[in-house]
Image 1 (tube, rainbow, N blue to C red):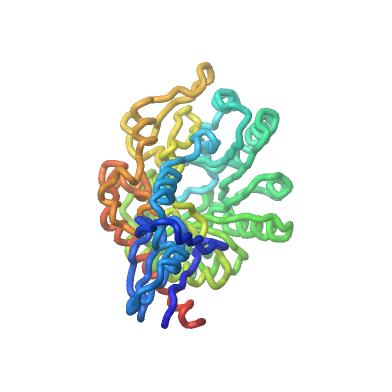
Image 2 (image 1 turned 90 degrees about the vertical axis):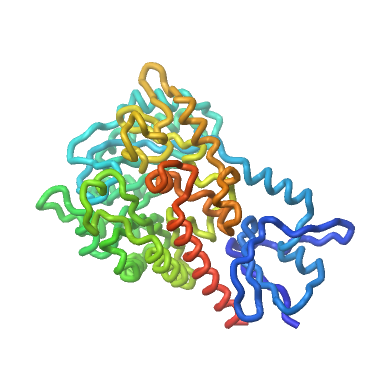
Length: 445
C-alpha cells in the first residue's frame, strides 16, 4: 500500500509528533491543490510542505499528524497567534539617497534624472535620533536614483550608525556604474550588495540605457560584477521583466547563470513613474499569466541548478515564512526620501500625487524628526490578509498574504483588494512549480 509522503520546501522541516492521548482535527492550514496519479497533493501553508496522500486508502491518525494534515486545537490557536504577529516597522529603514542617476531606465519608478535632490545628513540624523539604539537595525541605501552618486554621504552615515547602534546590517542596491575605487570600498565594507541587471547587453541597454551618449554602462556593470567575483564578495541581483523582454526570460536566466549569479529576483514591471509616460513594450508590464508560466519553468531549472530565484510577484517558497502581512509596507516600513517624505515602499513614491498617496505615511523634518500621519499609518498597519474575504479560500493565503499593496492599489484602487487576473497568475505559477517537484520526487523514488 502506498504511504503518505511529503516534500519540504524549506530545508529540515521535521515530522510532527503524535500523542495518542490528544484529540486531533483537520488542520486549517493544509490546502488541497491538485491530484497527481494516485495521490491527492496538499500544500501546508505553515510548514511549507507538499503532502502526497494516496487517494484510494484510509490512513492511521499517526501518519496524518506526522505529515501535518491533522493538528490539535491548541496548536492551531497558537499558529494563528504567531501568524498575526509582525516585526516592528523601525527595524528596517531604507534611505533613498538621491534622485540623481547616471542611467536613464525606461521604466524608472522614481523618474530619476541626471540632476536631482539628495538627502541631507541632518535629515538622516533627525530620523535615526528618534529610534532607540538598543535594536537590531537593517539599513538599506537605495534611491529613486543611483545611491553610489552619494557615496560620501553613505560613508558619513555608516560612521554615524555604527556609533549609535550596536546591531547593524547594511545593504545597497546599485546599477553598478562606479569606478574601481568605489568597487574596492564596497568589497572591503561589511555591506551586502545587490546589482540591478535586466539581462544580456541588448536587453540591458534597451531597458536601462546610458544617461550620456559616451558611457559604456553595460561593460562597466559586467566589469564590476567580475571584480566582486574575483574578490570573493557575495552579491545578488534584481532583474525587471517588461512586455519587451518577456519572450526572452529563459535567455535572461541563462545569462544571469553564466555570469555567476546564485541568487536573484526576477520581477515583473509595475507600471509606475516613468513607465506611465508611454505605452510601448519597453515601458509596459508583461502579461501576468505568461510571466507566471515562464517564471515557474525558470524556478524549476534554478532548483536543480542550486540557484535561488525569488520574485516580488510571489516570494520564493524556499525562503519566506508564512504570515498575514505581505511585506514591510504593512508595518509600515520607513523609507526616507530626499524631500523628507516617509513612505511605506520605495516603489510607491509616484503611485499618485503626494497629497493623495496612501503610502506616504509621515514626514521627517530636520527640526522635529519623524512626524506621523495617523490615518495612513493605521490603514497600512491594519492591512491583514485575515480581513480580505477574496483571499479566504486561496491556498496561497498565508504566502502571498494579500498580494503587493502597490499592485492592488494600481489595479483596484485599494490596497485591500487583489487583482483577480494577478491572483490567477500566482496560483498558476504555484501549481506548475509544485507539479514539477512532485513529478521529480515520484520519478526518483
